[in-house]
Length: 440
Image (tube, rainbow, N blue to C red; front, side, top):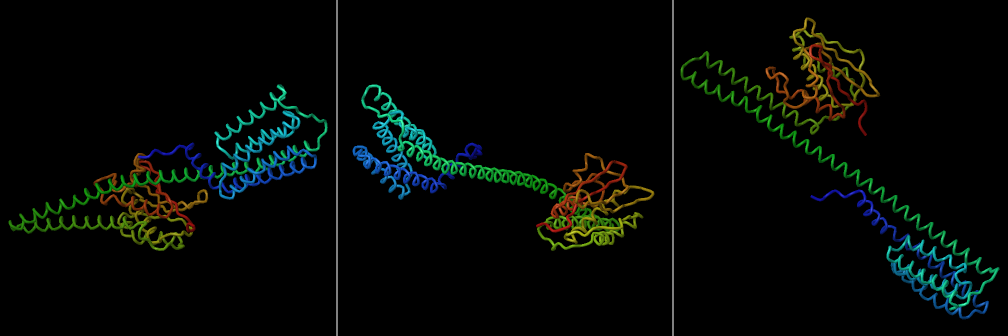
């Protein structure tokens, strides 16, 4: 399995890609520097011709040739070679003009650090080091050549050419550094944005993997419990079919009728269990279009469906006077209320005044609905467990253990949540949330 790339690896990978994407902008900057350099040399060439410095003019003319070649290479999408050529030619011409002028004190020497700064933003480390060595050699020539009288500098107190050259160097360098540093900044910003996108995608992937593992574990538990709960009525059917066969052979009609009754009960339980499993599988997969409906209408539908068991236990139901409008699958939320009411009746215990209260409250902008009873209550350690599939706190009680699990799934499909507040002997309050408007 491939290891997850580190943030540092992601950063440099993104930065390299952004550098490729910004290659056109870098090439444009190098082209601009090349034309500026050409313009400077042609101006100096013209000045030298006017001043009669023909040797200087000849050297500068020769230096202009590789500058022009570099500009032609830039048209062919090359960057490294023309950039290096421009830098080398500029360094050598600066050194020549300083040699024929004021030596190490010539204003043109300012171009050395500027060239290093600019090429450092364009070229790789090895090229920058080579250019640095070239500048050191040129400076050594200007210093030691003067000391050893290999050339004679010409010092002047006032020189308009120096002012012109210095101003041009500063303007060209400032513009080039601005454009290149802007490009570097944009590359860094885009690289950081890509890292954030990658990390968000990685987190989403890990969350999906975690959810998938959880779902697989849930499916494993589901398969085990389904096989167990289906096997129980099948064993009952097989056992009583054997008894039925023996009782028929003996002619014991009364015992045979009891056997038939047990077989019928086991078959009915299996049918109920299969129906509930089918219903559970449809939640979130097969849905009715959600509509705006008054929650009071949902409560009335659920009470009608549970009227028989409420009357059998003589349970009094209290209902809030006002309920809001909710945007839900009406049939499913009626099913939720029906299950919660039936669950409350089942665990109401032997109260002298069994009561169920259905209420509503708006908490922090969220609709919270409650079904409260004064039954036997639930211990805190079981508050989460009761919403798991097939979990029955009392195995002797009727039911498949799917009811509250089905309720939880329906509420979650509607974007809500459900929980219970209860203590043994103090009744239970089941609370759940629903949205008042459809999700965008």
